[in-house]
Structures are given as C-alpha cells and as structure tokens.
Image (cartoon, rainbow, N blue to C red; front, top):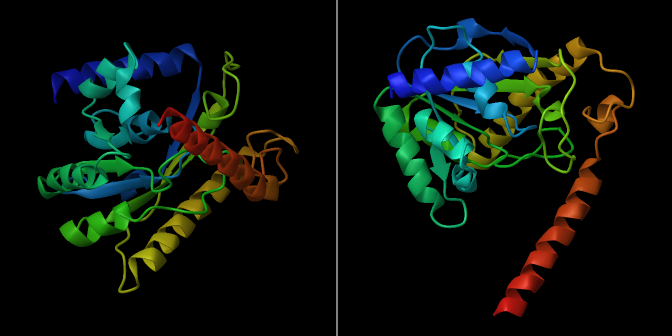
Length: 250
C-alpha cells in the first residue's frame, strides 16, 4: 500500500483535527512491532476502524481492516477505504472468502483488524461475537490484541440521526495485552475474547465519567442507550420485515 495508505491516513487525521477530537490512546506497547497480529475491537460507531488503525502515532504499521462490503459503494468513502487496504466483508455472499483473505495477510506477517461483533450494537455493550478472530488465530498462530474503542458513537452510529458533533469529543482507544485462544471450544474462547474487550470498554467508560443518562453510555452503566432486550426486540422486528419483503418480491 505504502503511499496510498499514507495519503488516506493523513486525510482521516485531518478530519479528526477539523472535528477537534480529543484522541486518547493507551496500551501502545501491546502492539507488536513486527509479525502478524489480529486487532479485535468492539463496535460502537461507523468510524471505529479508523481510530483503531490510526490511533498509534506515525510511523505506524499498516493494518488490513475488515469492513462491510457496502461501505465501498460510497463515492468518497469507497476510494478512501481501498487506499487504506481495507478488506470488504462479503457477509451475505461468501464469508469464508473474507476469512481466507485475512489469513493470507496474517501469513504474510501483517496486522489484521476486525470487529468480532460483526455489526454495531446500539446497546454499546459488547456481549456476543463471531468466531473469526479465534479461528484466524488458531490457523495462523497470530496473537489477538483486544481493543476497546469508546466515544466514536457520538460521531456516527446506528439508530441515531446524523448531526454535526460538538468539538472536543473524547475518543478513547485502548490496546490490551496480546492473547492466544486456549483449548476451549471456539464458542467459549470467543466469549472469553468478548469479555476481555468488554473490560477495556468498561475502563474507558470509567475514565470518561459521562453525566448520568448520557445516550451513548450503556443502560447497565447508568446511561440512556437501549438495553440488550430492547435492541434484540427491534432487530427481531427488522428481520421479520425483511423476510416479509423478500417473500413479497418472490
């Protein structure tokens, strides 16, 4: 990637400055200086990938991030993602193909970033994850670096109207200690990874000290975000609506 990655990353950094973001990064010593690793982060906002990739100061290692394929359709974001070497996730077509591409990058000694949750959870509480990170670690021997991202939901997230954010919003990125899955089942080790990520998120919430009832804080931490049950109920309605639409089109 080289030059194109550098240009695209500087464009994102310029955007951070325009927004006056207060980017706080800890745990940089946990990022390997060479060799493969999987950066597994929670997912609260559409720009999480940028903060995980660009949190470290320059010079930094390039990260091959996995992102939803439809994001590449945008006339501005699509070219920027390609310049950053982001790998499109063909979720509804061939997810195995995406994992195979990620595995090739790891076997080449690169960093790969992903969100085990797969999509933004509007409860802002990491609770469930897909097994891709654990499967990649076992296939390649690459360690998993759990990452907590916090604050990016205040910029752009699911189920919230788009609005120009206030300046000075704190964005917290925490890289945890590298970890390798144990001998447990893939499901159990994935749940363990989600707990590690959740602990980093909790530390971010503690340090932010947002006012009680803040919409971007999980309900179980005194915030106004939807509860897990509320999120599940709304998603169930959406899935039923989509199934009905497909049947009608057929």
